Image (cartoon, rainbow, N blue to C red; front, side, top):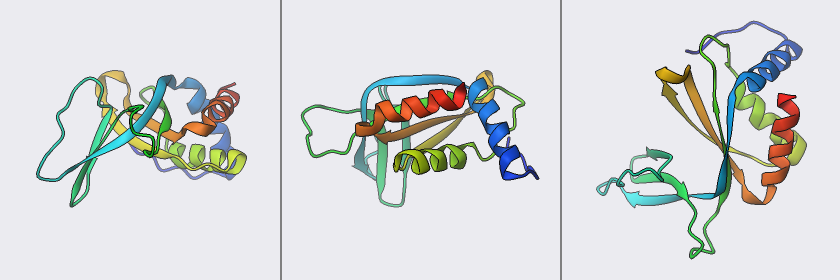
Length: 143
């Protein structure tokens, strides 16, 4: 699941460009937000909930943004499903570093595992204001 590679930076870049080209990319419509609930009140799961994570005090779930909450930070979102048997080690850092260097934006990543679809998958979120620019860079990297 996690590979260890001894390669130059140029070799890593070349490998990860092949990985992003081979990955199944989904661009999720709309905007997304995190909604919190106390640890004693786990969130209800439904088809709109893409991810749930917690720390010692709070549950956080990733859901479609609600227009009625103007002060809430909202994000654009893409997901990548990677084919089985591909060395995608370093992908998250590589994509995040590329987007930071080219657009100045940070990202968040939530990973999961689906053995029926090749294994690891990632949701990558970014500020909604740079959505079009992020999608342009991702398409360039996949070309």
